[in-house]
Image (cartoon, rainbow, N blue to C red; front, top):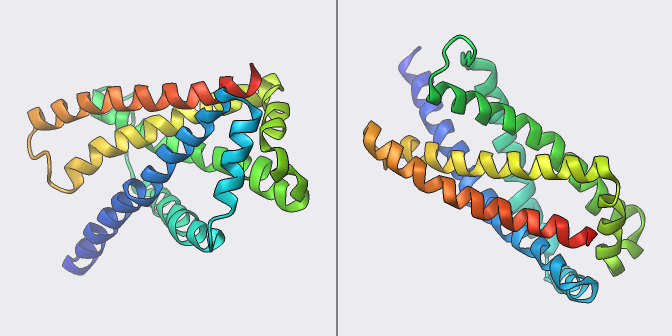
Length: 209
């Protein structure tokens, strides 16, 4: 690998990591908190959705802080996947499994995000009345056992991707420089993921109970 190519790869890895944590990770935490409000009932949840819809230049914010970073992060993630050599069945050590699961969960997230956007934003563009009662729309969608199951799996894979991505980002950015520090910080990321997953699960259950 030439020095120029190595430098570009070094830079792209850090941009990829940064996009996954700063705009996308923060948005994911906020979005799961927002959906957890479903437990408080239709009126509360719909009022929250309506307040969000009133934000000036909402589409611009979504495009620049969510859509573009998501496309860039996913695109380079696929590049990393194509160049990776993880073989978890042949080399079964923990880091190799985590590397493989990070790549696979990323692919699953692409499909899950596409499904979620189709059921929410795209559906609301086709039928704007959905915005008036997003709670009932999600309740109807999640009342289907297959849809609920897909959402639950997609939620936990997304949470794993973020929590494990946080641990690997600390390595990428040189914050954990030895195996012991990496192991300690990785252990701290586990409760973060569990709390975030529980928050998201609470939101899904809140739509159907």
